[in-house]
Image (cartoon, rainbow, N blue to C red):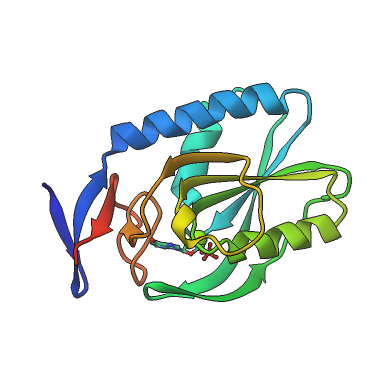
Length: 179
Ligand code: IMP
Ligand code: MG
C-alpha cells in the first residue's frame, strides 16, 4: 500500500484516483438530469472543493451552468471547531436561483448548514448540496445531502483537495490517516 508522510503523520492510500473519477462522473450524470433547464449556480467551497469542482464541472454537460467560489474557514488541524466564517462573499445574484453547493467532504455538516442558511437568506429558490465524500458517522447538522460521491468511515483523509494543515491538497488520490 502506498504511504505518504505529511508533517508528523502517516497516511495510506484509500481511494485511488480512478475510483474518485468514477464517482464524480456518476454525480455529473445525475445532476445533468435533475438540473437541466434550471440555469443552476454552483458554489464551490474553497479551499478543499477546488479539485472536485473542477473535475465535476468538466464532466457536467449543462451549457447553462455557472460556477462561483466562496471561501470559508472552519477547520484547523484534525477536528472541526464548528465555527464557520465567510471570508470571501458572493457577488452573484442568488435571488430566485437554483444553487448547488459543492463541498469536498461533509463531516459534522456545520459548514454546509451555515452556507445553506446564508444562501436561503439571499433568496435562492432552492439549495442543493453536493459533496464528494460523506462521513455519515460524524453528521450532526440537520441537512439534506442531494448528491454524494463516496461514503467513508469516520477517519481523517487527505488528497484531491483535502489537506492536513495546508499540505496534501495536490495529491491525486485520497489517503487515510494511519493510526
Ligand atoms: P464540517 O463542517 O464538520 O462538515 O467540516 C467540513 C469541512 O471540514 C470540510 O470542508 C473540510 O475542509 C474539513 N474536513 C472535514 N473532514 C476532513 C478530513 O477528513 N480531512 C480534511 N479536511 C476535513
Ligand atoms: Mg472544506
